[in-house]
Image 1 (cartoon, rainbow, N blue to C red):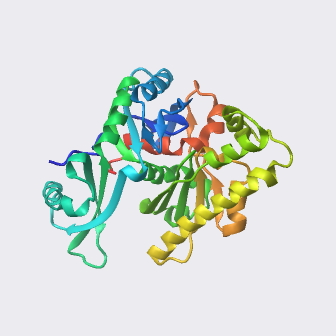
Image 2 (image 1 turned 30 degrees about the vertical axis):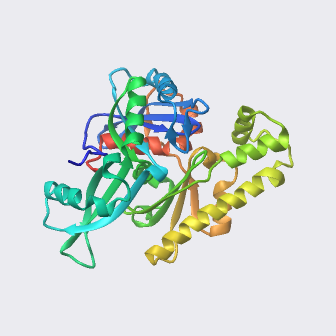
Image 3 (image 1 turned 90 degrees about the vertical axis):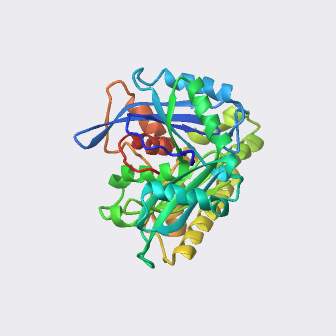
Length: 359
Protein backbone atom coordinates (compact mmCIF):
# COMPACT_ATOMS: atom_id res chain seq x y z
CA UNK A 1 0.00 0.00 0.00
CA UNK A 2 1.28 3.46 -0.83
CA UNK A 3 2.27 5.35 2.28
CA UNK A 4 0.92 8.84 1.73
CA UNK A 5 3.53 11.55 1.54
CA UNK A 6 1.01 14.33 1.09
CA UNK A 7 -2.33 13.77 2.79
CA UNK A 8 -5.57 15.56 1.95
CA UNK A 9 -6.44 17.64 4.99
CA UNK A 10 -8.53 20.72 5.60
CA UNK A 11 -7.84 21.85 9.19
CA UNK A 12 -6.16 25.16 9.89
CA UNK A 13 -2.43 24.45 9.87
CA UNK A 14 0.61 26.53 10.65
CA UNK A 15 3.13 26.39 7.82
CA UNK A 16 6.59 25.58 9.17
CA UNK A 17 9.69 25.92 7.00
CA UNK A 18 12.52 24.03 8.71
CA UNK A 19 15.64 25.56 7.19
CA UNK A 20 19.36 25.07 7.68
CA UNK A 21 19.80 28.38 9.51
CA UNK A 22 16.32 29.35 10.66
CA UNK A 23 12.88 27.91 11.26
CA UNK A 24 10.05 30.04 9.90
CA UNK A 25 6.35 29.71 10.71
CA UNK A 26 3.25 31.42 9.29
CA UNK A 27 -0.38 31.04 10.37
CA UNK A 28 -3.07 32.36 8.04
CA UNK A 29 -6.84 32.56 8.32
CA UNK A 30 -9.39 33.35 5.63
CA UNK A 31 -12.30 35.77 5.92
CA UNK A 32 -14.67 36.55 3.04
CA UNK A 33 -12.17 35.21 0.55
CA UNK A 34 -9.22 37.21 1.89
CA UNK A 35 -6.23 35.94 3.84
CA UNK A 36 -5.19 37.39 7.18
CA UNK A 37 -1.92 36.86 9.03
CA UNK A 38 -2.70 35.55 12.50
CA UNK A 39 0.84 34.75 13.68
CA UNK A 40 4.39 34.29 12.46
CA UNK A 41 7.70 33.35 14.00
CA UNK A 42 11.36 33.14 13.01
CA UNK A 43 13.83 31.27 15.20
CA UNK A 44 17.53 30.50 14.56
CA UNK A 45 18.42 26.87 13.99
CA UNK A 46 20.91 25.20 16.31
CA UNK A 47 24.25 24.76 14.51
CA UNK A 48 24.78 21.20 13.38
CA UNK A 49 21.13 20.22 13.78
CA UNK A 50 20.64 20.33 9.99
CA UNK A 51 23.00 19.34 7.19
CA UNK A 52 22.17 19.44 3.49
CA UNK A 53 18.53 20.13 4.41
CA UNK A 54 18.38 16.91 6.40
CA UNK A 55 17.66 16.77 10.14
CA UNK A 56 20.69 15.45 12.00
CA UNK A 57 19.46 16.05 15.55
CA UNK A 58 15.70 15.59 16.01
CA UNK A 59 15.77 16.70 19.64
CA UNK A 60 17.63 19.94 18.86
CA UNK A 61 15.22 20.79 16.03
CA UNK A 62 12.31 19.90 18.34
CA UNK A 63 13.61 22.40 20.90
CA UNK A 64 13.63 25.15 18.26
CA UNK A 65 10.10 24.18 17.22
CA UNK A 66 9.04 24.39 20.88
CA UNK A 67 10.04 28.08 20.79
CA UNK A 68 7.91 28.50 17.66
CA UNK A 69 5.05 26.71 19.44
CA UNK A 70 4.95 29.47 22.09
CA UNK A 71 4.32 32.10 19.41
CA UNK A 72 1.42 30.25 17.77
CA UNK A 73 -2.11 30.26 19.27
CA UNK A 74 -2.65 27.29 21.58
CA UNK A 75 -5.72 26.06 19.71
CA UNK A 76 -3.69 25.52 16.50
CA UNK A 77 -2.02 22.14 16.80
CA UNK A 78 -1.65 20.97 13.22
CA UNK A 79 1.37 21.82 11.08
CA UNK A 80 2.42 21.55 7.44
CA UNK A 81 6.13 21.09 6.81
CA UNK A 82 8.20 20.30 3.72
CA UNK A 83 11.18 18.40 2.40
CA UNK A 84 13.52 19.19 -0.48
CA UNK A 85 16.73 18.36 -2.25
CA UNK A 86 18.15 14.97 -3.08
CA UNK A 87 15.70 13.17 -0.76
CA UNK A 88 12.78 14.02 -3.08
CA UNK A 89 12.02 12.86 -6.60
CA UNK A 90 9.11 14.33 -8.55
CA UNK A 91 8.20 13.28 -12.06
CA UNK A 92 5.20 13.50 -14.36
CA UNK A 93 4.00 10.13 -15.60
CA UNK A 94 1.19 9.28 -18.02
CA UNK A 95 -1.69 7.04 -16.98
CA UNK A 96 -5.03 6.02 -18.48
CA UNK A 97 -7.44 8.95 -18.20
CA UNK A 98 -10.32 6.72 -17.06
CA UNK A 99 -8.58 5.44 -13.90
CA UNK A 100 -9.95 6.48 -10.52
CA UNK A 101 -7.59 7.57 -7.72
CA UNK A 102 -7.86 4.10 -6.17
CA UNK A 103 -7.07 2.44 -9.49
CA UNK A 104 -4.19 4.87 -10.05
CA UNK A 105 -2.79 3.98 -6.64
CA UNK A 106 -2.92 0.28 -7.45
CA UNK A 107 -1.31 0.81 -10.85
CA UNK A 108 1.46 3.00 -9.42
CA UNK A 109 2.16 0.38 -6.75
CA UNK A 110 2.62 -2.22 -9.49
CA UNK A 111 4.90 0.01 -11.58
CA UNK A 112 6.74 1.79 -8.75
CA UNK A 113 9.86 -0.35 -9.08
CA UNK A 114 10.46 1.02 -12.57
CA UNK A 115 9.40 4.58 -11.69
CA UNK A 116 11.48 5.19 -8.55
CA UNK A 117 15.24 4.52 -8.41
CA UNK A 118 15.16 3.70 -4.67
CA UNK A 119 14.22 0.53 -2.78
CA UNK A 120 10.47 0.84 -2.25
CA UNK A 121 10.73 -0.11 1.43
CA UNK A 122 12.76 3.08 1.98
CA UNK A 123 10.43 5.61 0.35
CA UNK A 124 7.00 7.17 0.77
CA UNK A 125 5.01 7.92 -2.37
CA UNK A 126 2.11 10.11 -3.35
CA UNK A 127 0.57 11.32 -6.58
CA UNK A 128 -1.73 14.00 -7.97
CA UNK A 129 -3.74 14.03 -11.19
CA UNK A 130 -2.90 17.12 -13.21
CA UNK A 131 -4.57 17.50 -16.60
CA UNK A 132 -5.28 15.52 -19.72
CA UNK A 133 -2.19 14.98 -21.86
CA UNK A 134 -2.35 17.30 -24.87
CA UNK A 135 -0.50 14.90 -27.16
CA UNK A 136 -2.62 11.89 -26.18
CA UNK A 137 -6.10 12.67 -24.76
CA UNK A 138 -6.47 9.05 -23.64
CA UNK A 139 -3.78 9.73 -21.01
CA UNK A 140 -3.74 11.96 -17.95
CA UNK A 141 -0.61 13.63 -16.60
CA UNK A 142 0.07 12.46 -13.06
CA UNK A 143 2.59 14.09 -10.74
CA UNK A 144 4.35 11.38 -8.75
CA UNK A 145 6.54 12.31 -5.78
CA UNK A 146 8.72 10.08 -3.67
CA UNK A 147 10.76 10.90 -0.59
CA UNK A 148 12.92 8.90 1.75
CA UNK A 149 10.69 7.74 4.57
CA UNK A 150 13.53 8.44 7.01
CA UNK A 151 13.50 12.13 6.05
CA UNK A 152 9.73 12.29 6.31
CA UNK A 153 9.64 10.65 9.73
CA UNK A 154 12.42 12.88 11.07
CA UNK A 155 10.32 15.97 10.37
CA UNK A 156 7.21 14.40 11.86
CA UNK A 157 9.16 13.46 15.01
CA UNK A 158 10.75 16.92 15.35
CA UNK A 159 7.34 18.58 15.00
CA UNK A 160 5.95 16.27 17.68
CA UNK A 161 8.85 17.14 19.98
CA UNK A 162 8.00 20.80 19.44
CA UNK A 163 4.34 20.32 20.34
CA UNK A 164 2.83 20.11 16.84
CA UNK A 165 0.96 17.37 14.98
CA UNK A 166 2.17 16.97 11.40
CA UNK A 167 -0.79 16.81 9.01
CA UNK A 168 1.00 17.49 5.73
CA UNK A 169 4.55 16.98 4.54
CA UNK A 170 4.91 18.79 1.23
CA UNK A 171 7.74 19.43 -1.22
CA UNK A 172 9.42 22.82 -0.75
CA UNK A 173 9.40 23.75 -4.42
CA UNK A 174 5.64 23.14 -4.64
CA UNK A 175 5.04 25.15 -1.47
CA UNK A 176 7.00 27.96 -3.12
CA UNK A 177 4.87 27.64 -6.27
CA UNK A 178 1.72 27.86 -4.19
CA UNK A 179 2.86 31.08 -2.52
CA UNK A 180 3.12 32.77 -5.93
CA UNK A 181 -0.55 33.79 -5.72
CA UNK A 182 0.28 35.92 -2.68
CA UNK A 183 2.69 38.07 -4.72
CA UNK A 184 0.52 38.75 -7.76
CA UNK A 185 -0.39 42.17 -6.39
CA UNK A 186 3.29 43.15 -6.63
CA UNK A 187 3.37 42.38 -10.35
CA UNK A 188 1.58 43.86 -13.39
CA UNK A 189 -2.10 43.02 -13.80
CA UNK A 190 -1.46 40.27 -16.37
CA UNK A 191 0.86 38.27 -14.09
CA UNK A 192 -1.76 35.67 -13.16
CA UNK A 193 -1.58 34.23 -16.68
CA UNK A 194 2.09 34.85 -17.39
CA UNK A 195 5.19 32.70 -16.80
CA UNK A 196 6.65 33.63 -13.41
CA UNK A 197 9.90 32.32 -11.94
CA UNK A 198 9.80 31.96 -8.16
CA UNK A 199 13.39 31.97 -6.85
CA UNK A 200 13.96 31.31 -3.15
CA UNK A 201 17.58 31.84 -2.11
CA UNK A 202 18.19 30.12 1.21
CA UNK A 203 21.35 29.54 3.19
CA UNK A 204 22.45 26.41 1.34
CA UNK A 205 19.76 25.79 -1.29
CA UNK A 206 18.20 27.87 -4.05
CA UNK A 207 14.74 26.76 -5.16
CA UNK A 208 13.45 27.56 -8.63
CA UNK A 209 9.76 27.06 -9.39
CA UNK A 210 8.25 28.18 -12.68
CA UNK A 211 4.51 28.82 -12.55
CA UNK A 212 1.87 29.88 -15.06
CA UNK A 213 -1.81 30.37 -14.36
CA UNK A 214 -1.49 28.67 -10.97
CA UNK A 215 0.21 25.58 -12.43
CA UNK A 216 3.76 24.49 -11.68
CA UNK A 217 5.61 24.00 -14.95
CA UNK A 218 9.12 23.26 -13.70
CA UNK A 219 11.11 22.95 -10.46
CA UNK A 220 14.79 22.72 -9.70
CA UNK A 221 16.78 22.67 -6.45
CA UNK A 222 20.31 24.05 -6.70
CA UNK A 223 22.93 23.58 -3.98
CA UNK A 224 23.88 27.23 -3.64
CA UNK A 225 22.91 29.92 -1.17
CA UNK A 226 23.81 32.79 1.11
CA UNK A 227 26.24 30.65 3.07
CA UNK A 228 28.92 31.49 0.48
CA UNK A 229 28.36 35.21 1.00
CA UNK A 230 28.46 34.87 4.77
CA UNK A 231 31.75 32.98 4.67
CA UNK A 232 33.28 35.62 2.40
CA UNK A 233 32.36 38.33 4.91
CA UNK A 234 33.73 36.17 7.72
CA UNK A 235 37.11 35.69 6.06
CA UNK A 236 37.54 39.19 4.62
CA UNK A 237 36.63 41.15 7.74
CA UNK A 238 37.65 38.77 10.54
CA UNK A 239 34.16 38.51 11.97
CA UNK A 240 32.51 35.65 13.82
CA UNK A 241 29.92 33.65 11.90
CA UNK A 242 27.01 35.32 13.75
CA UNK A 243 28.50 38.78 13.17
CA UNK A 244 28.90 38.00 9.47
CA UNK A 245 25.26 36.85 9.25
CA UNK A 246 24.07 40.07 10.89
CA UNK A 247 26.30 42.24 8.70
CA UNK A 248 25.07 40.47 5.56
CA UNK A 249 21.48 41.54 6.17
CA UNK A 250 22.13 44.96 7.74
CA UNK A 251 24.81 46.01 5.26
CA UNK A 252 26.98 47.23 8.15
CA UNK A 253 30.25 46.61 6.31
CA UNK A 254 33.27 48.64 5.12
CA UNK A 255 32.73 50.77 2.00
CA UNK A 256 34.83 48.44 -0.18
CA UNK A 257 32.68 45.38 0.62
CA UNK A 258 30.77 45.91 -2.63
CA UNK A 259 33.82 44.96 -4.68
CA UNK A 260 35.41 42.50 -2.27
CA UNK A 261 32.46 40.29 -1.33
CA UNK A 262 29.13 41.47 -2.75
CA UNK A 263 30.03 41.61 -6.44
CA UNK A 264 31.66 38.14 -6.53
CA UNK A 265 28.65 36.63 -4.76
CA UNK A 266 26.25 38.38 -7.11
CA UNK A 267 28.18 37.00 -10.08
CA UNK A 268 27.94 33.42 -8.74
CA UNK A 269 24.25 33.87 -7.92
CA UNK A 270 23.51 35.26 -11.37
CA UNK A 271 25.24 32.25 -12.94
CA UNK A 272 23.12 29.84 -10.89
CA UNK A 273 19.87 31.62 -11.73
CA UNK A 274 20.73 32.01 -15.41
CA UNK A 275 21.60 28.30 -15.63
CA UNK A 276 18.35 27.26 -13.95
CA UNK A 277 16.24 29.48 -16.20
CA UNK A 278 18.06 28.32 -19.33
CA UNK A 279 17.43 24.67 -18.42
CA UNK A 280 13.73 25.44 -18.13
CA UNK A 281 13.60 27.37 -21.41
CA UNK A 282 15.45 24.59 -23.23
CA UNK A 283 13.14 21.88 -21.89
CA UNK A 284 9.94 23.88 -22.45
CA UNK A 285 10.69 25.40 -25.83
CA UNK A 286 9.78 28.86 -24.53
CA UNK A 287 11.96 31.85 -25.39
CA UNK A 288 11.77 33.83 -22.17
CA UNK A 289 10.13 34.36 -18.80
CA UNK A 290 7.77 37.20 -18.03
CA UNK A 291 8.47 37.93 -14.36
CA UNK A 292 10.74 36.91 -11.48
CA UNK A 293 9.87 36.92 -7.76
CA UNK A 294 12.89 36.60 -5.44
CA UNK A 295 12.56 35.39 -1.85
CA UNK A 296 14.54 33.71 0.92
CA UNK A 297 16.93 35.15 3.48
CA UNK A 298 19.56 35.86 0.84
CA UNK A 299 16.94 37.40 -1.39
CA UNK A 300 17.10 40.38 0.96
CA UNK A 301 20.74 41.10 0.08
CA UNK A 302 21.05 44.59 -1.34
CA UNK A 303 20.51 44.97 -5.07
CA UNK A 304 19.47 41.41 -6.02
CA UNK A 305 16.34 42.60 -7.82
CA UNK A 306 18.18 45.33 -9.74
CA UNK A 307 20.92 42.86 -10.70
CA UNK A 308 18.42 40.48 -12.29
CA UNK A 309 16.60 43.28 -14.08
CA UNK A 310 19.85 44.68 -15.50
CA UNK A 311 21.42 41.35 -16.44
CA UNK A 312 18.41 39.31 -17.53
CA UNK A 313 16.07 42.06 -18.67
CA UNK A 314 13.16 40.50 -16.75
CA UNK A 315 10.81 42.41 -14.45
CA UNK A 316 11.88 41.33 -10.94
CA UNK A 317 10.48 42.03 -7.46
CA UNK A 318 11.43 41.01 -3.93
CA UNK A 319 8.65 38.87 -2.49
CA UNK A 320 6.20 40.28 0.03
CA UNK A 321 3.50 37.63 0.47
CA UNK A 322 1.65 39.84 2.96
CA UNK A 323 1.53 42.90 0.72
CA UNK A 324 -2.26 42.91 0.40
CA UNK A 325 -3.21 41.06 3.60
CA UNK A 326 -4.75 42.14 6.84
CA UNK A 327 -2.58 41.50 9.88
CA UNK A 328 -3.71 40.58 13.39
CA UNK A 329 -3.35 43.43 15.89
CA UNK A 330 -0.97 41.33 17.97
CA UNK A 331 1.62 41.28 15.15
CA UNK A 332 4.41 43.83 14.81
CA UNK A 333 3.86 44.89 11.19
CA UNK A 334 7.34 46.36 10.80
CA UNK A 335 8.90 43.09 12.00
CA UNK A 336 6.67 41.09 9.66
CA UNK A 337 7.67 43.29 6.71
CA UNK A 338 11.34 42.86 7.61
CA UNK A 339 11.07 39.06 7.48
CA UNK A 340 8.51 38.82 4.66
CA UNK A 341 10.88 37.59 1.90
CA UNK A 342 12.01 34.74 4.18
CA UNK A 343 8.47 33.55 4.76
CA UNK A 344 7.42 32.46 1.26
CA UNK A 345 7.79 28.70 1.73
CA UNK A 346 6.14 28.87 5.16
CA UNK A 347 3.28 30.88 3.62
CA UNK A 348 2.87 28.36 0.82
CA UNK A 349 2.63 25.63 3.44
CA UNK A 350 0.09 27.65 5.44
CA UNK A 351 -2.07 27.86 2.31
CA UNK A 352 -2.57 24.09 2.49
CA UNK A 353 -5.26 24.89 5.06
CA UNK A 354 -7.44 26.34 2.31
CA UNK A 355 -6.41 24.40 -0.76
CA UNK A 356 -7.94 21.16 -2.04
CA UNK A 357 -4.78 20.18 -3.84
CA UNK A 358 -3.02 16.98 -3.03
CA UNK A 359 0.38 18.48 -3.85
